[in-house]
Length: 221
Length: 322
Image 1 (spheres, each protein chain N blue to C red):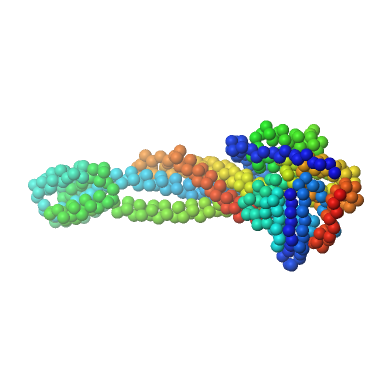
Image 2 (cartoon, chains in turn blue, red):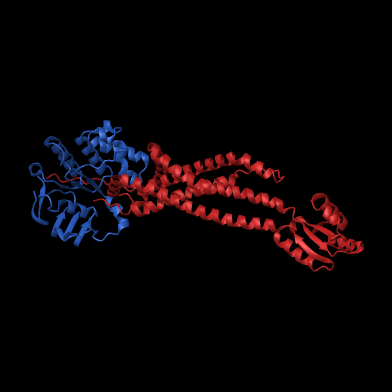
C-alpha cells in the first residue's frame, strides 16, 4: 500500500531528516512509527501525505508513484487518506457535525449521504449525542475522537496519525488506540507515529523504529 | 492476526450528485460569507464605509457634470447666427437675401433687424443713447438673424453654416453666438476627464481596501485553510468563501455609495436650482437614473470580487500545511 524506496529528505540548511530509507507497509497493515523526537517520524508522514517532497528516492501509494505528483493532483491524493493530528485541528467556528462532514462536502457528496456517513462515523467514536456541540465545549479526548471521525468519515484506504495520544492520559490513549485497531480490522491501512513505547508494545503490532533518519528496526508480529 | 475484511471504499459521487453539491456549496458559501461579515460588525462597517466614500465621490461628481451638460445642451438650442450686412445695403437686396436664406435646407427661420431698429434698441438699452444720437449717421449695420433647424444646431454644422454665410455678397461679418458655450464645453470635457481619472484612482483604492480585508481574513483563517487543504480541498474550494466575501463587500459598499450620492444630491438640490434659476432656466437637478444606479452597484461588485481575487490568488497558494 505504501512503499518508500531509498528515500532521503533534506531540509534547507542541510539538515537531513531521512537518509536512504526503505519501507513497505502492506495493504490492511497496522504499524507504529516510533523513535526519539527529530528522528523523522513527522517527516515520513508528511512525505506520504505529499505535504513534503523527498529530496531523493521514490514513494508509491497503492502502486502509484507520487514522488513528483503535480500540485493540482494533491487534493485527490489526500482524499484517499485520513489524517489525525496531535492537536486535532478542528475548526472552532462550526459544530461537531460540520467538522466531521467537511471531507464529504469537499468531495461533493449528496446531503443524504453526508448525513448518513457523518452519523455512522460519530457513532463509531461514540459521539453521536454531541453532533450539535461546538468543539471548544468538548474534552480533549472527545475532541480527538471528533478528529478521528473526520479522518475516517470518507472511508479512506489509509489512515495516518501523528502523535494522536500526545495530550491524553493513559486510559484515554488506550481507548484511542483501540479505535484505530478497529478501523484496521475493517481493512484500513493504519500508520501511527507515537513515542509512547509502553502503549504501542501492548498493541502487538508492527513497530518501525526510526533513529537519526534511518529505519533501524522493523519488527513484524 | 485477524485477516482484515477489506472495507468497501466510498464510491466517488456521480457527476450529477457532484454538480448538485457544487451548487449547494455555492449557496452555502453565499450565506456563510454574509454571516461572516455580520459577525464582525465593526471591521465590516469600516470597510464598507471606505468603499462607499471612495465610490460616492466620483459618482457625485459624475452626476453633477451630467446635469451641467444637460443645462448647456439646452442653451445650445438657442444657437443663432447673426449676419451683419454692409451698411447701406438696400432694403430690396436685404429682402431678397432673406428669402434666399429662408429656402436654405438647414435654416428654420430668418429675422430681419433693420439698422434703424438696431440703433433704437441699442439706445434704449445702453447708457450711450445720447452719445449715439450725436453721431452723424447710424454706425450699425442691418442684420439678419438666422435660426437653423434643430438638426443643424451642433457646433460642427453651425460652424459650417457660418463659413457658408461668410461667402455671401453683402454680408460683412458672420457671428456665431456660441463661443462662450464652446469654451464651457471645452471646460466640461476637461472636468469629465478629471472625474474619470479620479474615478479610476478611487476604484483602485477600493481594490486595495477589499484586497486588504480579505488578506486579513485569510491570515485569520490560516489554520482552517491548512486543515482543509490537508483534507483534500482544492484551491478553488478554499477560494470560494473569500470571493463571495469580496462580492458582498462590493454589493453592500455599492448600495451604501448610492445612498451617499442621493443624500449629497438632495442636500445641494435646492441651492443648485436657485443658482440656475438666476439664468432664467426651469432647471431641475437630475438624480442618478436607474441604469446609472445599477451600474454603480455593478461596478462596485466587480471591484469587490476582483479585489478579493487578487488577494486570494496571492495568499492562498502560499499557505501550505506543515
